[in-house]
Length: 196
Image 1 (cartoon, rainbow, N blue to C red):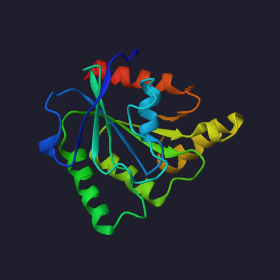
Image 2: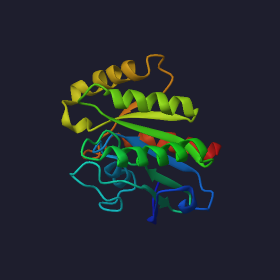
Image 3: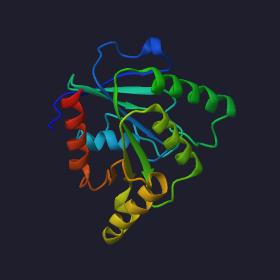
Image 4: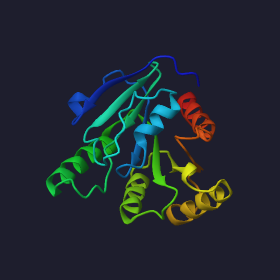
């Protein structure tokens, strides 16, 4: 997909602030600092549309990015960030839950995990949460540039086995640095958008 005019639209902390345009929404989920903002920038071939930070836990709202008035990338706050107070974590958890279970425009969840590590307990909880929502999902093993190319496929298989042993959810490698795995993801998004 050739993206011509992507724009950041709004940060929301509740349903009243969500966009009202009814465009399909592709939602990014993952722990803090797993690379959701970098994923958006890579996919749309922009350096700084989605704000990235080396400090985890920066995204505390739901950020909506309008992609050529065709669909939204929706960046959810990361989970598992220890410096966030318990109260903040609960607040963030509540509005993520409200969004995922009530938002009718969600067409696909992209669940990012770090290819270098086994999925954490938080990752497994989030995976179960996504499954219980009944929404279509793909798993991205991100930061594939950080390991040897020869190990990428093997690590992707390991992550799939740990999270989705049935193998019914597509699991792909991804790297914002190398930009070499984005074609499969665009293909999946295109197919989802055609069906929506």
